[in-house]
Amino acid sequence: SITRAMFVQIIYRAAGEPMHEGIEPFVDVPDGCWYYDAVCWAYENGVVKGVSEDSFAPERTIDRQQMATMLFNYCSFIGQANPEQYNSLESFVDTEEISDFAREPMQWVVGVGLVQGVGDNRLAPKMDASRSQAAAIMVRLTALIQKNIA
Image 1 (cartoon, rainbow, N blue to C red):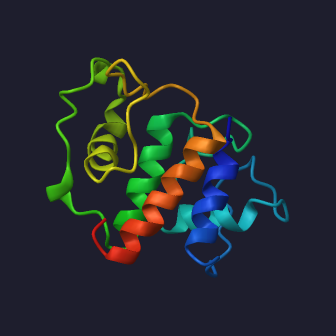
Image 2 (cartoon, helix red, strand yellow):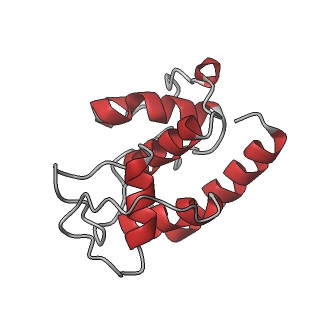
């Protein structure tokens, strides 16, 4: 599986590791740790939120709906999240498992083809994401951004 810190670091690198203001929004993201810059930048730009007001839970595994939300927020930040590309998700049997915060992001990531089902018409929004899933999604995202169609 992949942690929240690992995934936000991947997005940060995909963004070119931009500078940030150094706002330290979370008590569990210590200055100088390997994911500090990524989390601070992502928080400052609306890509991530914490699991609470002051906690990011960097070592917690990320589930598929959290990953979708970070991707959607990142693509919104860079102006690439087109609402016309939403998918109704009707073809999946487990859409009732999607948390309210992730419904719109899940509709978008499925609509543009970043996230696919896991078999048996399941989206598995609360299943821990794997490193291989994250890698495949980032390859797809890079291709969509290069084509300017995300």
